[in-house]
View 1 (spheres, one colour):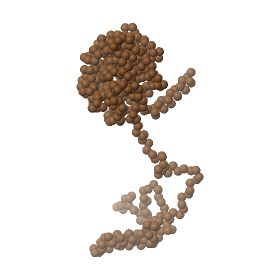
View 2 (cartoon, rainbow, N blue to C red):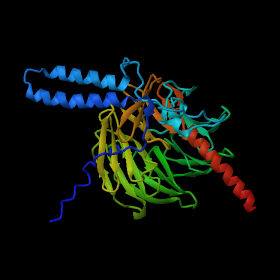
View 3 (tube, one colour):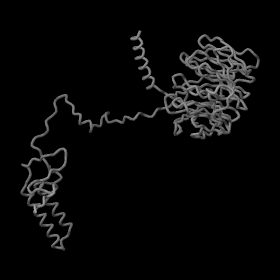
View 4 (cartoon, one colour):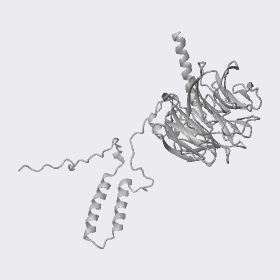
Length: 451
């Protein structure tokens, strides 16, 4: 039988196993008293054996006896609180002048260790500008405010439409109706073009050129006032008091190309989805209908949603998710509801405790803003999808009837029944603007190179 080999972990006499550390500190052995250390270790073994043989010896005395001899062995009788346990022959060399040690960054308390989390965005609680809007009609079912991509704010004041230049601060009258007792009931500017549609109480729709401020054409067909308008490329959709929706192709003489009939009362909300496929319509019959543009005229709604218990005027499509729609109900409902257009299901419903008159999504933040009437008359910025309140903006003394977003996506204009228009810088996007300006500069350089 061959002798059994000792396991690898067994200690070899005369050799001390190394501690598994990446760095070893070697003390100066000239300052260490080996004889005293050996004596302390031997006496420790004897004291342990004596402890088992002599039952009268107190355990605490053994510990104190060992601690005393250990201190003497390590410090040569010097006070252990003042003695240096380890000492080195030579000190570390001083660094060269101007040299930096990157390892010191780990222990630095300078700016490099500061948190990189972006600070919370501060939203001003007061409006940065207020405009007077005398004769602004206090009618929940009308849409009398819109902001064009030219940075002109269009507002209807009874029988006239005015354009306020947000860049220069100047004001210009675009039109004034000539027929007695006729008033403007809706306004909508086309995206990335020079035209604005104006609906009237007589059921007519007029198209004006913003750049030249000239009347282009008038389209008829509705039997009652036109309270809601929206563009889908060259197709203009209009909703009237009789509950019908007309599609107009503004490029051709015979402009009326489709009629959508399902609402039984006045239509007060119309919004095309960002991809141009779906049209959402809300009315005084508490219905929210979704129409598919690919199905042509005389169709039935893809979805007819009945969860709201009051008029549905506030309608807004999410800019980063085309299938997500937000809608708000009137005084008897006071809820903001979110819809998945893929399935037609309600994703969430939030009680705002106020009449919901308008909803806008932010283009840069995962947020939306709602304008309210009775009883609080305030604007609320919400964080989506948690629907936590980011800010409450107060200043209007009557209900907020309309809201519109500036072309750069930073400012919301709100028109209230107190005949004022207030501007709120609630979606500040300074960092995004810098990125866009940098990109546009690089694009211009590329274009110059191509030319």
